Length: 498
Image 1 (tube, one colour):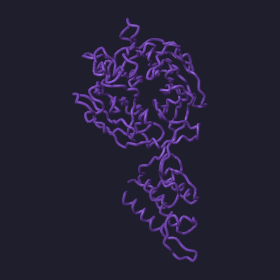
Image 2 (cartoon, rainbow, N blue to C red):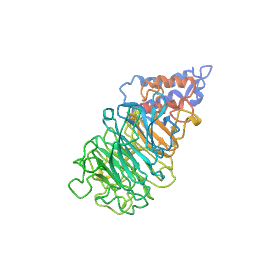
Image 3 (spheres, one colour):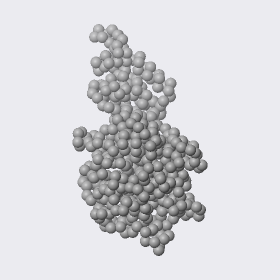
Image 4 (tube, rainbow, N blue to C red):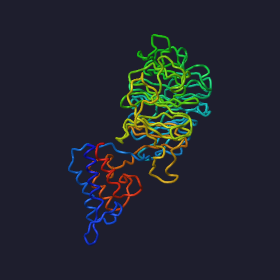
């Protein structure tokens, strides 16, 4: 296939470097000069290279190149939003947490209007920087039972996970139905906050190491009588503790420490502040963004069907520190600093499973401080080989973001406090400044007919743009800001497998 591509490019070169003078003499010219007369025989010959492609309908389509991500702002004017998600069975709504207001806002995606779904009573929350309303999860059977769960720090600074029942599809409840669990917090920071239901219908809860710095209580490595610095897993549909009103859950029998030393609720441990986590809706892997101390920000994976991982903190930070027998290193890590691939506080994200095929399988994440947005694909290494380099196709999207609106109407994608998914798996980005953005499309080189892919149906559209002398970003395949003959060879490369 590579040979075929080279032959077509050679044909293009032979045809496009010659044009005719007014008296019919052939002269050698450059591509831009040939473009000056769109009706010349030279242009027709040049385009013949493209027309020849049409007859090769069995040629495989090569990889495409996305040059920009196109976001649409779907919510604004929010007060310190820290999470956005959809509810099972409700594809028209997003639910957004306002951290210190203690409010769940509901955004109607069909109209763009916003309404208050529920507000916690005044005095419920502690509201220092990392405290407040931090996590929301809807029960898998929410459409039937109306149950949802909140994770917040109470007025005393301790973690509370509580169950609520909606009053209607558009109205939640300010009053909890019952407590699920509570955790004493020794300091005001490192509260983690994410909660989510897994594919097994169990509730997963991410907890930080208790705060201060360097985990002074060694909470993350202590697995008995200590739920800090962990991923917990509980079953909220039954109760192993009927005599304890503060513990309304049961222990899944497959949790790794059942029947042995260690708290039964623990699913994984050795984490510092796993503030944002997510399940891949295709593979069921659990992705964890763990905020570092001074040297490394890390992305960890708990692959589907596995459990009991020790991610090493506080003995190790990323891949730094002495070896810990059996500990699991991250699949990706980055250093602290202000460089292109650096930052100071990771915000874990999601594996993209939305409507843009080329991004399928890319894990999106960001740094809250440096405002950088990245993605990569997991290379499927075995857990025993995790070393911080277990990825392919790393991309920095920071300078390739488009909003589709101008000025103040566009909003600013910065201080990314969280990611989310809508009901269709489309990526949401949450800015602490008060905006929610949805990734709707991408500018893809070669996709001139804008159908979401690069194939032979783009050839007529490409020829049309080329002959019209206008500009379209998808047709500017050499990315020089102009549409001319120089775009033909890279367009051919986009059509043909490499």
